[in-house]
Image 1 (cartoon, one colour):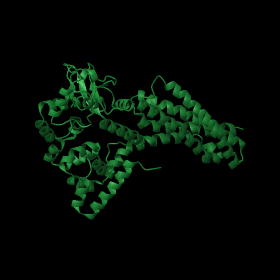
Image 2 (tube, rainbow, N blue to C red):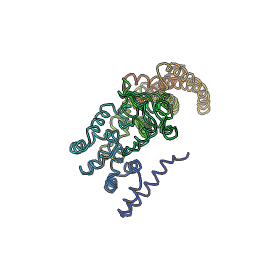
Image 3 (cartoon, one colour):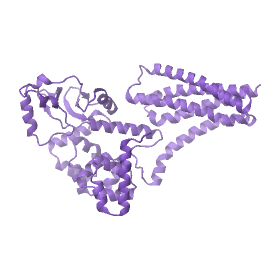
Image 4 (cartoon, rainbow, N blue to C red):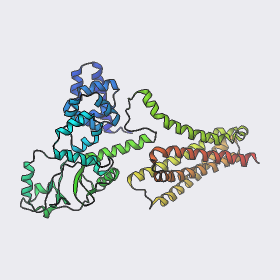
Amino acid sequence: MREPQHEKKTARQLDRLSEALDSGVQSQVKQLINSLNGAEIGDLLESLPQAKRQVVWELVDTDLDGEVLVEVNDEVRAGLIRDSSANDLVQAVGELDIDDLADIFNDLPDDVITEVLHAMDRQDRERLAQVMSYPEDSAGGLMNPDVITVRPDVSLDVVLRYLRLRADLPKVFDQLFVVNRAGQYLGQLKLADVLTSDPGSQVSELIDTSTQAIPVSMPDHQVAIEFEHHDLISAPVIDQDGFLLGRITIDDVVDVIREDSDHMVLTAAGLDEEDDMFAPIVQSARRRWVWLGVNLITALLAAAVLYTFEPTLDQLVELAVLFPVVMSMGGIAGTQTLTLVIRGMATGQVNPHNSRDILRRELAVGILNGLVFSVIVAAIAFLWYGNPGLGLVMGIAIIVNLVAGALAGALIPVILKRLSIDPALAGGVVLTTVTDVIGILAFVGLASYLLLAS
C-alpha cells in the first residue's frame, strides 16, 4: 500500500527539522520552518515533543503565528498561547480572516481579546460577533462574512471598476454574489463571466441561480456533502429570510472533512482528536481511564456469562480452545456492518427511510456468511478433535453469532443516535459486548445441551 503523499511530505519535513534541531544551529531551524506555510508548520509542531515544540515555536515568524494557531488542535494551541507574549499574540491574530479569528478567539487571554477588539473597526467587530453567535459545527460557524456583492441592475464595466478600487480581494475568490437593495440573495456572478463577457452586459443577464445557497443552520458535515455534490469552490450562506450573511470556501470544507475523519478514527478508541500527542504521561493516562473502565465492565460481563458455564468447560476442554473463534468471527462481522452504517449516517446515506432495507440486507449477508464459514469451521473442529457433535455445535454457533453481529451492527448506531450518543464513540464497545455474550451463549450453551446432555 502506497503511503499518501501528504504523510510522506510531512515525514520528510519532520526528519529535516529533527536533524536541524539536533545540530543545534538555530538559523538552520528558523530558515527551514519559515519556508513552510501555516498548515505545514502546525503539522510539524503537533509532531514534536513539548520541549522541541517550544524551541521551534519561538523561531516561527510572527506573521505566520496566526495561521499556525488556527491549524493546530485545541490542546497544542493552548500550549503555544501560554508560550507567547500578549503583544506577539495581538500581532499574530490581528491579520486573520474573521472566520479564522472566531475559531480561536475564546482561547486567547482576556487582555489579548481586549486589545484585538480595540484594534478592530466597528464593522469587523459586528462581523466577528455574528460568526461567533452560530454553533461551531454549522454553516454559520464556518462562514466568512467578508463577501463581495453586486446588484443585478449594474453593468459588468461597473463591476470591474469596483473590483479595481478595492484594496484587496478575498482569498479563494471565484464569484461575486448578487443581492437586491435589501441585501437578499438572488444568485451568483462567476468571475470568469465578468472577465470574458461584454463589459456593457448587465449583471442580470449573467446571473447564475443553478446552485442553492446554504442555510446558516446547516450542519458542517452536510455543507461538505453539498460542496462534493455540486463541485463548489465557494458558496453563499443565507438566513431564513434569504439575506446574504457570508460565504464558505473549499479550504474550510477540507478542514471539516479532515476533522470528521480524525473524529471517527480516534473516538472509536475513546480518544479525542483535540488532545496533544505529547501531553504529560499522567494526564494522557487519566484521559483513558474512563474508556478503559467501560471496556473492563463489558469484559467482566462476558466473563460472568462464561463463568456460569464453568462446569461445561471443565468437562469439555476443547470449548476453551474454540470459543474465541466464535466470538472473533461475530465481532468482525458486526464491526463490518457497524462501520458501514456509521459512515452512511455521517454522509447522510442512512436515514429512517432506508434503515429497514439496510437491516434486511445486512441480515441476509450475515446468514450467507454464517452458512459458508460454519461449514469451514465445523470441518476444522471435526478434523482437530474427531467429534462430529462438536463440529455441529461450532457450525451452529458461527451462524448465530454472525447473524447477531450483523443485526447488532445495523441497530446499535441507530439506537445510540436516538439516545444522543455518538455511535463512533460507543458503538464498538456495545457491539463487542453483544457478540461476546451471544457467542458464549450460543457455543457453550449449545455444547452444554447437545454434548453433555447426551
